[in-house]
View 1 (cartoon, one colour):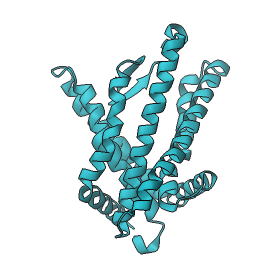
View 2 (view 1 turned 90 degrees about the vertical axis):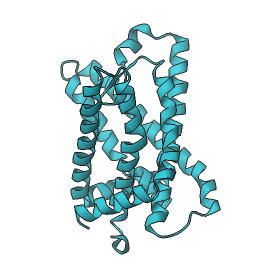
View 3 (view 1 turned 180 degrees about the vertical axis):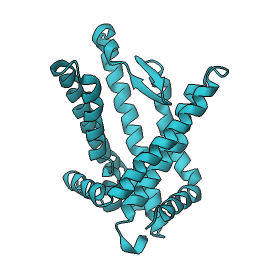
Amino acid sequence: MSIKSLLRHSWKSYSDNLKFILAFSIPLLFALPLASLLPNYVAATGVFLRFSSLQTDLTTGNALFIVLAFLFALLLYSFAITAINLIVKHQRTLTRIRHAEFEEIELLTLKLFTVFLAAFIAIFVGALWLRDAYPQHSQFLVPAWSLIVSLTILFVPQSLVLENAKLLSALKIAFKVLTRKFYYFVFFLLFASLLVLANTAVFLSLSESWPIALQVGVAVNALFILPFLEVLKTQIFLSKYSLLR
């Protein structure tokens, strides 16, 4: 399947199911009110935690609040990603979502939540270790480590939802898709970077005259860009089936 066909299938899946995708993407916005209360900053239309503040300003109560808010946001994120993949799966296979599969969403969400949480812990612990062990090079090593972990689980949502694989099997399948569809994978990274940078540029230029421009940019990311990129990932995953190309 060519890149043109990949984008065409992605856009068709996205536009045909737009109202459902938007509805399931709304939980992603629940993190915004919580995020404003955490030690963070907005950059590139994303919300990032201030690690340096955690070392000096964090109390036990604040730490508990941050952990609970993070877990709640991650659970909502996992649910949204699971639902979007399920919608695209049935759109491409021309089948209807069965009632039993709606009941399975909870289990799939918990599986995906476990994967995301494990990845976050790996990134967090690795970042702390790298900052202590290699302080002079941590500014390069920490992002590199985060990228490696993130890419490892890039196609795990698709493995879990589309093939109902177990956790370890999902990791293996995701890695195979990444290596065997490397051309699509590189395109995905470039295309995702382009969308995020374009979104950032637009709302950054508006921030001087519009005080909430950056926050609106985060909302656009959550409601439109991230869901479309998830649809694109699903189409890349489905391209391994010759009948669906």
